[in-house]
Amino acid sequence: MSVSIKTIIRFVFAVFFFSIVLILPAFVQAKNQIPTKTVMVMGTGKIYQNNSARAREEAIAGSLVSAVDRVAMEIFPLESMVRYFQAFNEMIYNNTNKFIQDYKVLAEFPSTNNYRVMVEATVSIITLKKLMSSAGILLEEKPLPKILILISDQNQNDRSPNYWWGQEKYLSESFSITALVNTIKTKGFPIIDNHIISQNTRVNPIYDKPDLNDIEAINLSLSSQAGVVIVGKSVASISPNIIGENIRSFKAIVSARAIRTDTGAEIATTMQTSVTANTDEIAGVRDALSRAGSIAGEDLASQIVAGWQKQEEPSKILEIIVEGTGDIANFEKFRRILNNISGVKNLRIKELKPEEAVIIVDLQGTAKELADALMLKAFGLIGINIYEVSQDRLRIELIAG
Image 1: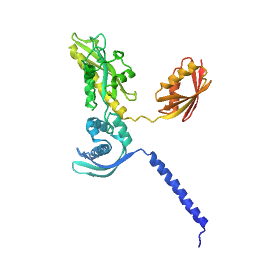
Image 2 (image 1 turned 45 degrees about the vertical axis):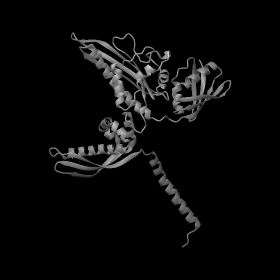
Image 3 (image 1 turned 135 degrees about the horizontal axis):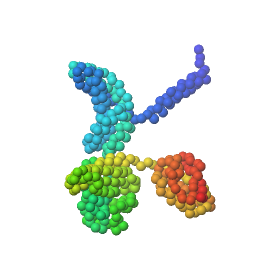
């Protein structure tokens, strides 16, 4: 029985079509699947008072911790695991279930004293990386930045803040700054010695003030080749609270922020307060300052690690068509505000007509995010009407008040 050419072609096409229908969903699912790692591990639970059920639960729990440990050792540098071993263990034992996507017990064996299990566990690599980064654990072999400390301190008897970068050479540091620096050092960050800078560098008088803004802090730190500058203040005071005749309370507040010198981005911020009680004023203030400084250093270090590892989002070109530009002053005010919005870079005017202008910017983020940010800005006597938001374009009308 002969088969026609048309019949063969139809059959081949049908096979091809159904192959695509069946394979494509699997491909899409694989592409969108969250990266995971499946490992085989074994766990042991001790049997107490013939309670095999509890021993089995302990064996499974232990095997899941081992699964996360094994995956972490495979994907993270040994240097980071050694340096942050304590923080890693605290995070794993407190969050094991967050990393395990699913598991199943393949085999189990209760003996006289122990309960043994073999478990197949699937670990979420994305969740593991995210939580390790938030805990301040370095995820890749990237050198940690040098840090310059620009924190002023004002103790209970000081009439004004003290700082080392002024015209007067003030080189002594408060207990809070010492504690903060020592805590950050334990995380592996190199700290720039401000004493050497102060002794060998003539500081510009424009920086002779205790509160520096971000630009001033970055400019002051560039000569030291700092990758991050920490700016802030430490204040100590005697609280009015008294216990009996001799015991008084002492309060210390340390507030600081960390800024990347290459991008100007703020990658960490903290404000920590500590209150102590003591019969001795010097000891009470020292303890309060040291505790606040230590906690602030711990908080800053973990945030800096996460911020330093974060890759800058690639920018894309966005066209902004602005109508109602007849009043040049209003248009210039809008342009200044736009240029200062986070994520907007390299603003340039592509076309300028009597009542319309076309602006081009390099944008990190989406057009919708920029539109939302513009809606929250105050433009004084003018208003804005954003009536088109697309992937690569905004249309905005300036409305005179």
